[in-house]
Length: 155
Image (cartoon, rainbow, N blue to C red; front, side, top):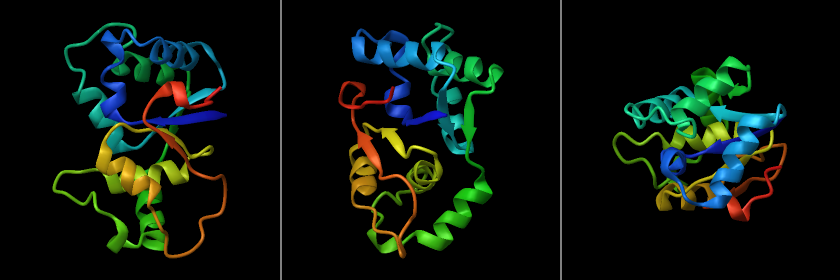
């Protein structure tokens, strides 16, 4: 399973993108049977609500539903996220606790994914990911985070 977390700030631009790197990422997601999208309930809502009027094949809404039909979603449950936060979060180091932000859930979601690979454009969220200092060591893959598809070896 080659899973990847794509922040809604990036994903919501897929439908009208002229960026060849984003198109390549989208095609990889849609055509590669090993490609999975990491999803939490909060991120699913951001994907679907952020693209309510977009039925283009490259919209994140259409991509999500296509991957869901093919059982290529790596869902991270609210319970898993809450447990991770209780075990590992040092809330003093998290700056993205602004009202309505799902960034703390997204951080947990990325760390609970198989490859811990993420594309994130939101500056505060990106900073919190890179500066995340858990209460105790989190075993597994090293975190890989970037702000654009061209900088990431997701294949």
